[in-house]
Length: 189
Image 1 (tube, helix red, strand yellow):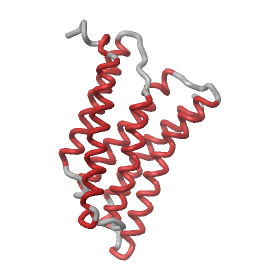
Image 2 (cartoon, helix red, strand yellow):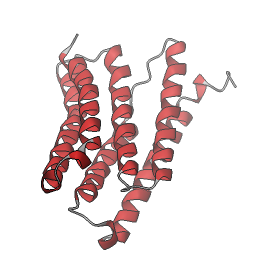
Image 3 (cartoon, one colour):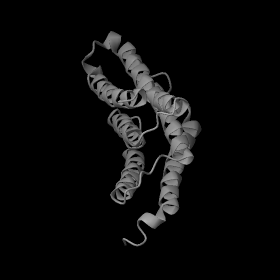
Image 4 (tube, rainbow, N blue to C red):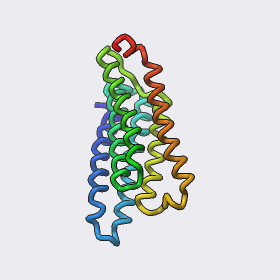
């Protein structure tokens, strides 16, 4: 197994560690909760950074593999799904935002499965990667709200613009995949 693939699998493990950390924050003594949440956010950012790292190493050392083309976007989806569900659970984000984002992720995964059934591997495109970067930046902002560093009520315009930007870019990138790869499903419908 190549190093980028090991990093991708490590990201999946890290995601579940972040999930556990986020779910036990209320069991931590009150005077330590903010530090615990900061540690959780830092660990989540590190998990998100591995997305850049595995891709960089794979491209730089020509270690691109079909496994990586499949698992890297899947690991991203697990990360994004987990993070947005946690933000909804922590009452940082409205549930409809997570539903829109997760719907796009599931639909693109379905399209990838359709491509795989036809012997094709559908790698992430630049718009999908841009969407992922924006989502991860948004998740850092959401983490800052959860920690208490930022109050949404103090920055309503910024917060609402960030939410709508994430929703619109996510939807647009999903539609883009379906338009670009319409040959996969047009004859199947």
